[in-house]
Length: 158
Image: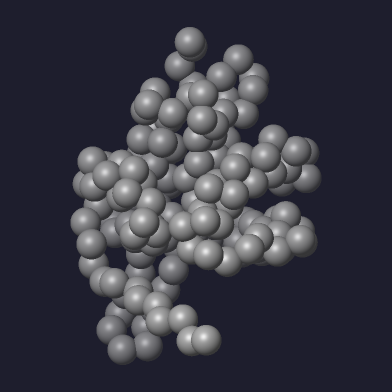
């Protein structure tokens, strides 16, 4: 397998047909872990969120391609939270790799590329959320140098 090419998404409309199935695979994997069904219009909602993030100038989206075929996707944005403390960080929203390309360091390469994008904009802290029951993802993020900062807890009411 050739090394992946990582490129920024500059035309979301043109790249969406390659991005959508990757995100569907990610969301489909998460549904049984969180117990909430995927909304029928999830794709339109997700695309609108990406469009807003990219248009703001504080967001980035990346595609990983092998031989011109999309095999991975990542996106994130600069977040500023001055409510109580001055805090600016790069938030990684999604990193997904096609199943047949997992274990080939594409997630690591996408994450490193996101990190460089944030550093180029003066942001030197990265944050993300991971579903606790997704133990493989937790292990991957730990291997990439991430550590727990806070716990988001849930209690379902009948």
